[in-house]
Image 1: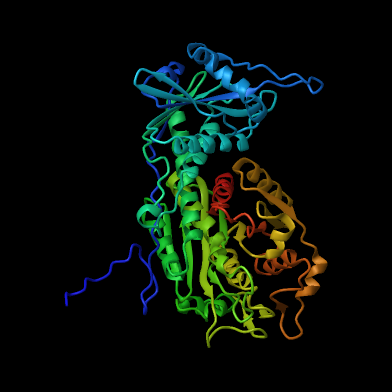
Image 2: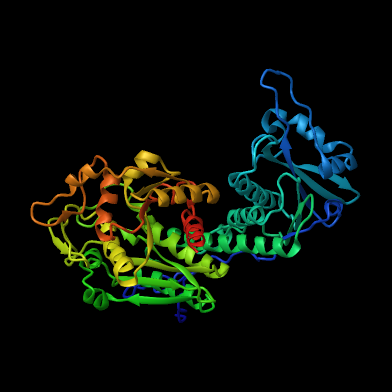
Length: 547
């Protein structure tokens, strides 16, 4: 009998006796893939396999029943003329679906022009109607549509994107297009093998944005690079949420945080507190949840400080880091298979930390905190009716072990508030199904008593595309949290559950400090595509504005 060879698994995972200690990261596309040119004539260059022409639709008179005629202008009109009116023709043929680009992100069928043995492809990209301002949402659709076209049109190596003058080439415009372009090309192949591996835009080597009008080359290049950095944070956010529990546990998440710090060029310092250090701080609320797990809880703290040392504000960002949530002894009866996404808050926070170190933001000291553990069942696990003590001395009656995330974050909030002394604090968590019922799967709920913070987060949601809506914090609902034997219970009734979760968390932050709880249970996951990367851009922008 021949000697058997040692089996090598296609990815790092657990063994029978040991948990996994490392999560691999998805390799991003090259940062040089996207560039910019101020010469509109390059779109006629034979070197491009694909040309995407951005157009704004003319405004239609509401009373008119006639179809609008194509109205190309500038470089797009010149290109159409050189192609014998092919662009105008495809717009007319597809008017019902495309409406001359009235819907931002819409595209026409591909036009193929043959010149001898070489074929060149053209696609028209809708930018909305010309009477409306260009918003961030439009730019995100532009970047995503360009990436999708480059992926869908097979064997495309080079692409030019003609951008009309109204779209502009401001740094914020280019950053938004860049971040959405790279993000759209994400494909998680870490757990696939053979022909199941999917490589997006496999042959693509170059995409050139060609805005009409003047372009400040150095500023534009920096803006594209910033978009790439933002996409890196989104990639990591998706990687963490997508990772199965046999790969991602408290230990491998802590090692992910260490890797972020190691690659930050000295801008981020990583501290990991083990169970003994947490016990010394009295973190009984966090440790109670982690008692039932194979891996010991890991309290992750990444501290970002700017290169020049000048700090205008010290902020804290907490992310819920429950790597898998069985519900504990109040075991879940539905959605168990999705409970790897219960670390969505931690994923957003760590993704933002990666981006912020890449951007080297100035004027702000940011502390990223994750109390990482699993909510599992064994002979040590906490049970309903336990009374636990948080690190601020508050006693908590455990009414339901499936309301565990708020228990882990209670001690994280005390740490950010008291030990670090953060001036402003936000917290992101996949906390309640009640928030999903209220707002659906596309919008996060923002719970805060501070109007300025609420308004700031609302504006940030609009410019980042991470949608949110302010929710009430009805103080009378605190009655639901009253305990017969302890200071507070960890949950109330089924009615208003998202609100009582927010009220519970308020007990662990100084009442005078601006604090917001952001429930991201809905938008962190898409049933069709998996992790969305939600929250990373929102956190990044909030930290940037804090400086």
